[in-house]
Length: 411
Image 1 (cartoon, rainbow, N blue to C red):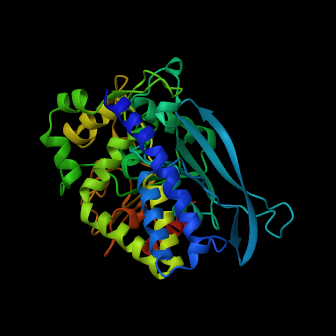
Image 2 (tube, one colour):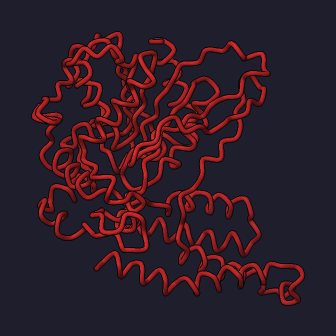
């Protein structure tokens, strides 16, 4: 009933949202006489804040139409390479036919986005910075409420198989970059391929701020998963999709619950951010207001996760630590990272990460003892939080150049 109540609440707020949107436009429209009142800008700011707090946020677009190569603009065409029920493999294809770069050979990169509540567009800045020097593909996970029951279930091992399918499709001259939650299934996928001596193994794997071993420097996220029993998650946060969505009756962990959790981690920070947005609107600081809109358009757009995948991730990754303990089996096949020898490994962490603690990602080095030391790197970004590892100034100036150099070294 929780999901149905949420939908009812959204329907109740919809008229309020529309009223707020229209009123904000009225009081800012020069045609409207009252717009010239001294308090009109204050009223418009209040209405826009009301609108943004009550609206439903749809999945954003990547909107990456071009990139710069050697200072010259090159058009980007977003292409669907493969579509599966729960994921679409997208390619940011460069139009090089009419350029001096027509024979340019760039390293092929598979960017594996996390399936942890947000859409793959959260990695827009990650993609943007990789594009000038790499041929970029990304996993765009589907909102589970949009997947009909007839398309079957999606388990944690299905995630692993999806990653393997994409690696085989794009490999072997491939470099895999995984972010946050995706690091464990990516490491498992490559380990299983290595055990099977798969000829399509990638050249490198870069693991960024992911819970390879959640026992190290546990954060609020880790503590929540271990303090609550598995039955609590199963009985408390799993809902059925209402009938107004294609995935009617599918069991999911709803995006709105995940979003509530995100807010609850730093409620004062978000409250201050919205107050600053209101003040920026009042004072006519359009640049700061637009930066707020862009961030929350992305942050507030969430997706539902399949219940079976979510619950298995809670148990396997955060409660029982199967990967670091060497007990994770995927369809009866033991995941053995020590089987990986030829794939170079780069781990990256943020020194101020409050979601994935220090040492959790670096733990991959101990699990992969048979990768030669010259093929291993680790980097901890000083003053960097979780999102800063893959987005923002430190990502652009410090982390992305290091990944580019690492990929170039092992291409």
